[in-house]
Image (cartoon, rainbow, N blue to C red; front, side, top):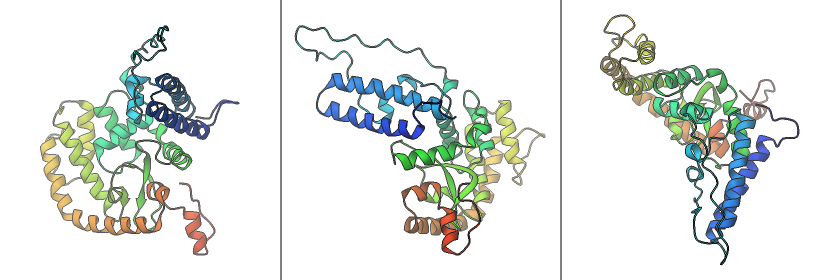
Length: 305
């Protein structure tokens, strides 16, 4: 979402957020709780401004994404550290509870990808979120998310606990179109080789079916299971439109056993190349194709996909 005229850019806000986090840590290390509280208030405001500028979401407040989740110490707001003869400032009023459906988009994507456990396209991510988690996740909101994440990382590397990034193609180590992963996954898991589309599909089917065993009667879950079962031989053993999670798991595992080892070797070789050839940003977001093509004498093509 573009910033309003005169408002700080997302990059400027991210730099400010990194500065304030450092300031909080230094103030706590020095025992200056009053300064730490002031910096924390500025940090919350800057994070809220970033959410509004990039995602169009309002800040969630401490109950949903508090300072402790970012690794910041939480000073005791009632600590007896006021100068003698002065009453400590009263704590700020508690913020209103935020409905669970207002979790930021990137956090919702992270939750869905964690459940899937493999690189996934926006449409699958949205379907999984709708079936298992509260609220909705429009797939259209995900189209620019990876680019926003990459800009954030390049502006302030590793300032966040995780990043949403593209899968990397095994041949060019370039971003795979339309596949999102999580930066904290092993590099091999974020590689997409010749067999990976199928093995990731089967892996996702198994994990989703395992979760579905806890709520097999949900219509959204059944629709999701049927989408997988229709493409896995032997998985759809019941009536049309209904799937037994156990049968889906067994069928997916049987086929996965055929491809898994070959796919694992291909991913491992590509991951070794990525570690040797790419910097930290490249290992998360892929090689710059324009630079690669220039080195080989090719000048056309796009590098930001």
